[in-house]
Length: 367
Image (cartoon, rainbow, N blue to C red):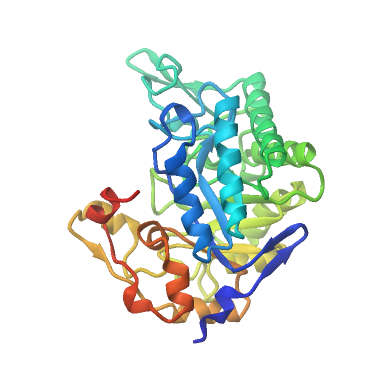
């Protein structure tokens, strides 16, 4: 199957990409104090120089006291951090690539003791106590408004420093997804109940971001069925339910849906070979990004469970057929691109035998 489909330009409104290859967001934790440094600049520049059309940055925390859940992750607020991201943008644009930040709030995943202020508990839809101590603060209406405002301001700042759009992280059991998921959202007000009501937080957040950046600035929304807490979790069970879930998000202002799956080749529903990105494109009419073990013969959980496992480069024939059939529009590459910055040009030039395998040992040596 010819690889040229991966290297055709893509255009949607103001977003023009030189290739269909997207760098998936992957937390690296090498921004001490939340500030991207020279190492971060070079990391993204190298991928842009080697054929990646769109870089989606690692998760970047919005300006809320409980947004962070991990050490040394980058912020997307404050003079120093935004100055660092401005240099990243300049480096990526200098290589002909495009870049968007993934805007992130971890919600109830946060643990006491986490930087920058260890006394701040997690924030989430529903309060949780442990040994009489609040470990997850149940969000008030004002808290909800504050978090939404933080996302809107981050998007406004992204536009101001020259980012090519934004991605809202609505997947994997973080704050937006915690509102979607009945297992973490036990609210009895207008933000809880059935999935339509549990989606209200995300809808209002997307609307606020859209209002902040205007009608033409690209907004990507990442969502998933699976969660960190439950790999078998499903928000919806049928195409009809998926369509009902996605339409309000699309109407709120999403331009592109980033459909997170662990294996891109797996059908989402019985009776069709379409994956989650394929169904999302069919139901919304919006462009979609597929992701999940692209270019590798094993998925991430296998690697985490078996530390000796090595993920070898895998055939792209299935992926290319789906892309040529317009099942989805863009392809996000995670671990394969993480370990081999030149993955895209090697694929383009037919040098698959030169692509580096992925292992925990290789990950530990990455710069």
